[in-house]
Image 1 (cartoon, rainbow, N blue to C red):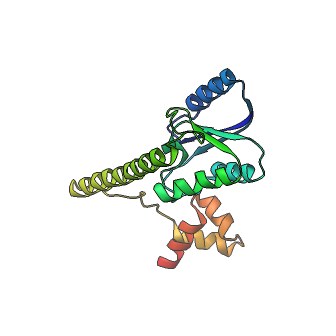
Image 2 (image 1 turned 120 degrees about the vertical axis):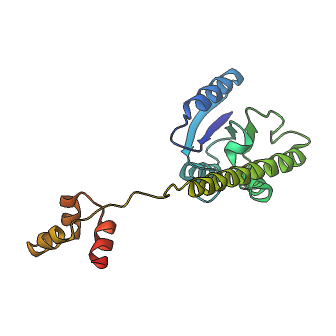
Image 3 (image 1 turned 45 degrees about the vertical axis):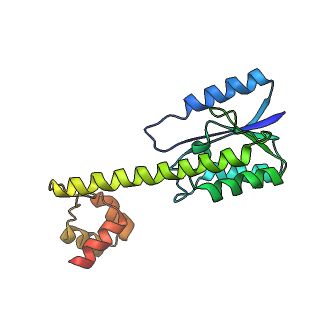
Length: 192
């Protein structure tokens, strides 16, 4: 059987390699041929593009593999019951199986798959909400403690910027010389 591996971590501080190694080892023990690996480092909330996930779905639509093996359902999607089921149903429609490594009962061949998936994807969506609530609470506490949020203000030498422009440099050239972004430079010039 030809399979694809799907891995996702939420931040660059985490490492996909642990997931990939375990999935590879499991697939090899089953005698499955790994034909693709799709690895994302992005939140699973659905608010940011998951480029590798999208590529996996496109490859599945072309039936480039028979099954997708992922670490855990919350690594597959945290977009809630309906959206997660849509993804899994789409794989089914394309005759591509799916399986969770950590949750062997999440298997496209299991008798209770729809019931278990509904419950688990609801829990995964709830976890996303909980993470968001914790983050908001932490930010509120930081504000109460007097911390300034956001990026530090960048000082731009507007006079020097205007001199460089007078010498014929464009915005990009001026920004590069002053070691600021073009956007920051534009804002400073407008504010001056």
